[in-house]
Length: 77
Length: 173
Image (cartoon, rainbow over all chains, first blue to last red):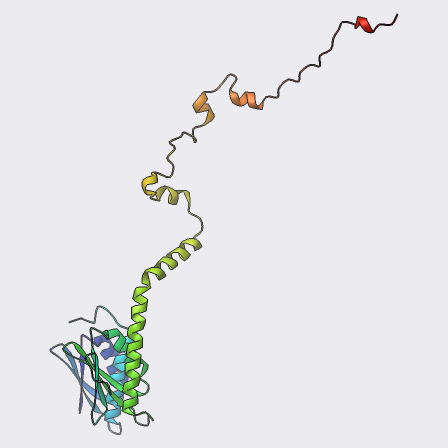
């Protein structure tokens, strides 16, 4: 299992939603909010490369945050 | 790699960790720089106090050293920050030019636009302190022999001066 941390003041929660939806065929996810940080735990499906999926998921969230920043969902701290 | 107050870089077994002072490198600039490297490395951004911490890990098969990635990231972050400064400095000029262009495209102003326009010390657009807009009739009244009539009426031609008396001195003997 790999744990990814996305600070809500930096990453858009909507972008995390989109990323989890896009990567659902490759891994199982658990999501939790903890002290202003979205914690995503991922477990790759059999035959999938977990470090690769974790890296690509983080990139996807970053890209989606830049592409479609929604000011209502991103909070500055 | 560089090590100062604004940017620092640390090699880790997984890759490289860069720290940017957020007062110098705004969040958007760092995200913009990260965006340009998404195809070559895995990027994760976090915040540590006033610093943004960027973790870079080369993608499998990418022929780039982490040092090179870190250098490229720093250069791109600087470029993005500078670009934002330029945009902020020239924003007023850009807005002014755009407004003029749009106003020009809308065509000449109508009567209502002119009436609504604030002329400041010049007063209202249709103020007429000299009474130029007052019609002739209002100013001088209607009816008999106005100066306008006099101006338009053709003047009578003067009669040629013909003497009816025969010129006695010219008569022959």
